[in-house]
Length: 474
Ligand code: ADP
Ligand code: MG
Picture 1: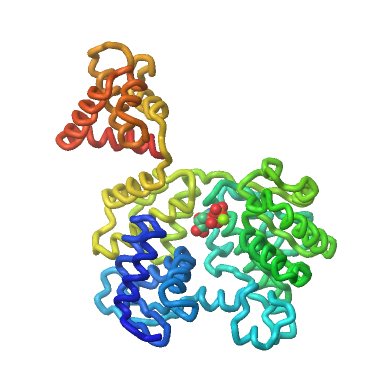
Picture 2: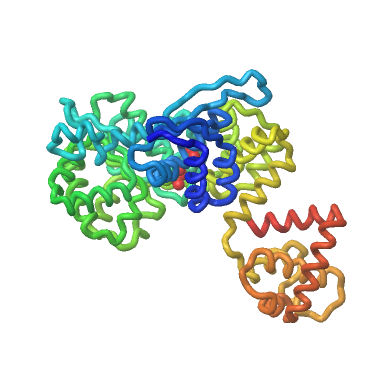
């Protein structure tokens, strides 16, 4: 198929728009320029290599699905990258195929059509090769070198390193890494896999997400080649399964995994697992499987402290060749406390916005993006939570809000609590009024207007409001 690239890309954009947030859409998809569509290959132009990397690592699934939907299964994506480092007028252009498409075509469970036609006996193995050659599904950018060590992750990192020294031969088998989301579990998994492949090229390493494992299991059961599925996994030397909490309730998959686990463990093969929960809190998991998880080492990753957050930011900046002033780095580290993925997301947005709009990275720009980012990911906050923060900020008791006092501080605290409740909670003005000092909805309406007017006209007040807002949102 060959045709009008602009129209094809517009159709793609429609699909993308429906499947991503407005912020991601504006930051990452709007700036893309379609270049050509020849022989089913859609070429799109992106503003920098960095942009390309980001699309490939964060939106490849969406892009793949979109291309399939708009062009069909034969569709391929190619990037044209404008090599334009900030301020460099001499931009040049290079073309790069979608990296992941290549991998996906060769991924386990998805042998390429040419190879299928040779009649593979085991559908999970790429045929025609003597040794078990598989795509390990490792992401080259998640290495130990760029994994910043801190108190929060020392145990998990050290244990991971120990495993790479002697896979299957340490007491850390299985190695189970657990933590909240966005704190580095997946990064460590890839780092382990990459290091082992480097040190022991003869070992077969495989990284799978548990959803992928489950899907493969379901397909294998449907196609009656469960034996092939099990044999395939039994041939792996280092099996890394990410996010095993998704195995919960999947009794049949757990049964099969139990057998694979036992086989690998008995044969001194290494297992690395991650979970977003402490092993005992994993619900709906077969007790005998849970007990296996405890055979080795369970290492947790905590939220990073400020110094680690600063170090992580510096590391990302250095690796991407970006320079940012100390005070902005510190500001970012202070604003985004709980999740490294979000911290990174904000950093990338800032850099992208500044390079796309040719704006200098200032603290204001950083602040705008953080605010937008935090708001868009903010949960629905309760009125009670907001009043608590506001009262705490002004050093008054919650019960004082309902006093019929004309004291400036109390009136103001109440109005501010109402203003933020309207902005961030999903409840009616009447309920907000009731919970903020037993007032009616017109008082809330009036309060919100008074506060917005003052934000517009009083700089100092505005700064104070931003300060309170941050406390509410972080
Ligand atoms: P999880 O799997 O726990 O949800 P990820 O491993 O996906 O988290 O980490 C989220 C992002 O944060 C990734 O881009 C990862 O590279 C980055 N990250 C997490 N921990 C660190 C660290 N200690 N040093 C550098 N980057 C990190
Ligand atoms: Mg993960």
